[in-house]
Amino acid sequence: MKTGITRYLCAAAELDRNFRQKVLEQIVYNRYCFVAPSYGADIAKVAVQCIQAKKRDFFMDCALLFLLGWFVTAIFTDLLISWPLFLSFLVNIGFRIYPYWYVTNKLSSENISSDKAPNLKEIGNDFSKKMEEMNQEGNVIYFGGDSPFVGAGNRLSGWSFLAETKIENSGEYIKLNNADLYTYIDSKMKELNISHMATANALYVDGSKIRNDSRFLEKEMSSPKRMIDAKFLQEYTELEEEHVRFYKSIQITAWDGDFVFSTFFRVHFTPQNLFVEMQNYLLPPLKKEFYAIDKHGSDIPVPFIIKSILSSIIPTFTGLFKSIGGVLRGFNEFVAQSYKKEMIRTEIKHNQIFNYGARKSIRELAADHKLHNFFQESDVDMYRKRIEKRLLQSILEYLEAVNVDTREFKARENVIVNNGVMVTGGEINNSQITGKGNFKNKLAKVAEQITN
Image (cartoon, rainbow, N blue to C red; front, side, top):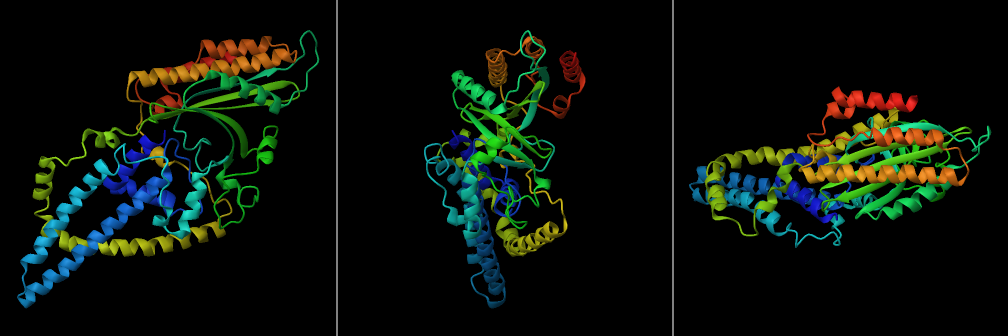
């Protein structure tokens, strides 16, 4: 399922220098902060592709710089001045045609496979260990922004409520534990049989609060732990901390990985109540320009070759001089990364609330702001309703089985089902997420009904 999205991101690494730089800064050059999961993508492959493309650009600049030296020497020594210009012309043509050929051939759906592990040696020994850790499934997410569910995309909807846990026909309250309810919910969720659905347990931790917490950070000059002991994770099903929360997640990777729908929920029993929370997130498809590679076959079209030749005439001369800047930028970036590394180390040392968390994933940076057709919108709505209904039914069945008076719970359930909020159609924009206009009014109405 990861193959399709990975292929498009690798193609962007080849063709888009800005995207490539963002990947390098967030993954390869990032030694201390948590790297957010890029759901549906093999981010290690994308990182390796970025390194390869960057090396190619640097080697081209070095070649042009050599030809510049040859050209200047030829001017003053009456050597064949045409040769460095001719070779510069060929280099510029190749620089335009090669990425196109590579993307349409090496990154075709037949040639890229999610089963083939990326060559981590391409990114150096210092980073290969980190990339290997990233390829492993983690159970801790460290967030650096407002939303704890970094990597999951945009928030679509959410709700929470309290319901009493009185024993039926009695004024007494029953003592229950979260773990048993979670186990029962898990068994019922498996019965949904939705294709490419996965469930997971994880802790969501504020990245600015872990500096002196050895549970999540071995030492201040290290990156946060991606995996904690399963027993420790299980303990948090019963615990409540301000900066650490346990959530179960249900994730559906649909339409060949085009979008990822995620539901995060938690339950918590207090001496007299049951608290239930559910949050729905959507990671939309990639921006439409990422899919442009599918328009072309493996053969390079003649018009593109002609355009590349014509576009290389002026750079034959200007490219020679621009290569000076390209080579200097390459060396300067190496020095800048060392300087930036020391700056971050200094900040960590002196900033007691240094944030080790992530704000966005690479997959989120490449994502569009909306779904691409009506059927995708319809499927998202269906996934949300099926999961929501199964969650509420599972909790209700569990409460009835332990003889809890469920009248209040049913009232809350009816409010949610009858007033279910979902963004369908149009764009997923800030006004919908933050709750402006009709969406805000509807949320207020639901909140009032639940409260009452």
